[in-house]
Image (cartoon, rainbow, N blue to C red; front, side, top):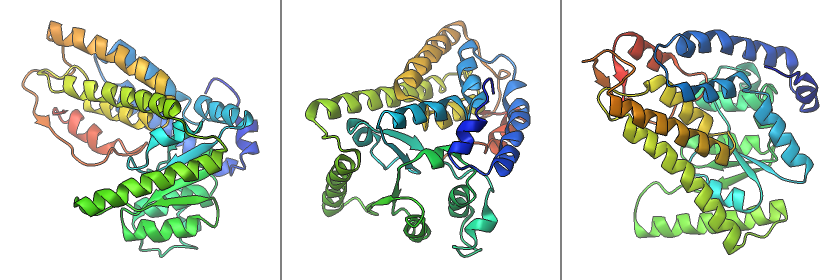
Amino acid sequence: MSNDYRPMWESLGLDLASHDQLLQAIPQSFGEVYLQQKNRPAEIEYYDFVVSEIHGLRVQELQEHKAKGGKVVGAFCVFVPEEIVRAAGGICVGLCSGADAGSAQAEQVLPSSICPLIKSFMGFKLAHVCPYFESCDMVVGETTCDGKKKAFEILNDYIPVHMMETPQMKREKDRVLWRSEVRDFVTVMEQFTGQKITYESLQKAIQDTNAKRKALARLSELRKNIPAPISGRDSLLIEQIAMYDDVERFTAQTNKLCDELEERVRKGEGVHEPGALRIIVSGTPMAIPNWKIPYLIETSGAEIV
């Protein structure tokens, strides 16, 4: 990292020894998985920079926001409406559960047999190794599984947690339930931030958040081309960064990247050999630093599309 962020990390109460161990593992794996790729788009340099500052510049921006009286809200799931957080003057950041950090601390309050995802996010908080988690004023949880329901109950002992009931079916009464959960979240955010959500603030938040989603959808469409103009690994990295980067900056940069990719498509340029097997990996985006599966697929001669 270009700056000395240790004073900031200390002020957040991080366990610096454990945090240093976590950070030391990223540069080597990132170099092997990402930087050794050939024929990467020029605009991907922005995302490489974001990873080089993974616990630095963006965390600093969150602290500056908080210093002005703003709130930071953490979430683990895309069901949490980022638009409402933004409309209330807050910043929504995605929290991860991608590393086996703090398992010993998590097992003091959770069964040792609980799923690694839950153990990981509890471990991040209890071991004080994630500056994003320590920057949050509130975490918004969701009832997507029984393990999470109980874990969020326990997490509330360490940081304020608001739970959103996620319907398990698609009936009309489930839609009614979800609408009521969203309205309740509006009230919670207004009370928590002290800022009234107006028609104008919600409209602007929706426009900004949808613009980010449209940029990501544009990237996904471009990946359908033969040959693919960008690797699956780089696409995954962009999805991961979308969870915590500044929304407007990320949107602008991703559209610049897509402009470059469209030019590549016009020229018939791709990142893999002609005739490479095309693989779809489905499911929720994997959290940093879970890059192993894409790395194995694409270093074996296939491409993730």
